[in-house]
Image 1: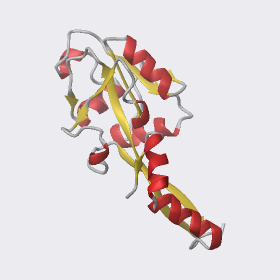
Image 2: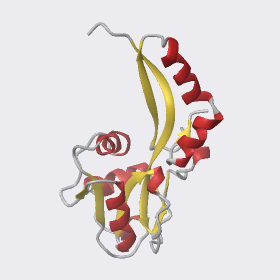
Image 3: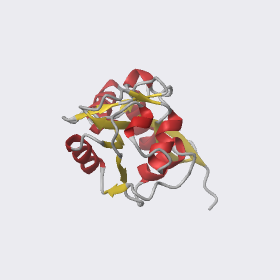
Length: 178
């Protein structure tokens, strides 16, 4: 509509693949993650776990994370028919934490919940130092109509470069852009 949108990186997030803390699985390839969430891989024994079917938990279809994960981890393929749709990160974390055969994905802020552990994807852990290297990393943005001016420019400078803003970003579970 005649607007020139300009992107400003606000922070980074990661979509962490999580399993129950008792799971022997510590890492998966991105292809295995795709197979698990599309339903092509049906049993933990196919990825180094016990002989048991997966309980796969995903966000619901109206979630932006649902679509992001589908694009980043599943080559835009459909989720498997047996996946269980959850309202949010907390619900996925709760279900995986109490189910030894559970697997799901959550925003990095929820990955440290008691009873969970993250798995490496292609040998990279979802840690702040891995932003951009972890395959399920994503940038979060502010958008302006053209070059920001006045108070908007001041806010963006504070929000994207100040130590105070970095502390807030870190506290809510995201990774500061700089």
